[in-house]
Length: 187
Image (cartoon, rainbow, N blue to C red; front, side, top):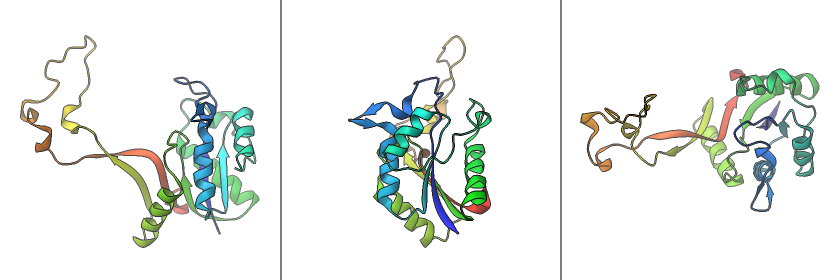
């Protein structure tokens, strides 16, 4: 049984084309995530799942494994991360060994480092968790958020009962996409 890290890096980003290999502080964006996974040092395999040969070449040059190019059906705007993870796990189990634990590391969280992964893994093991995800505190209370109507009217944007100082609300957190660790049974 092996523990794997999966770094999903689709080539067809619409909002920021080629974002995974754009330069960030002198290196391709994806290299920061690959380095943190490799520096963590306890993954049996660090796999980049991509449909782009250009991303694959960068990933391999950074030390990651790219044993295949992701099939087109898992590289569409509607393909889910779960589809990608399932595909990778099935490939690993068909070609290498059974998977016990998966860590998903999105390349768009370049500030996560090996210590963050190590601490998340320690929490996962200490709590005997089935899954653990990284979160960050919201900068502003969720009560200050709402949808905008088509005419961009702000009428009723904040409910009257929420018209108070931000210190009057508790802390809220959101998933930040940096680290997802889970048992094989979730795939």
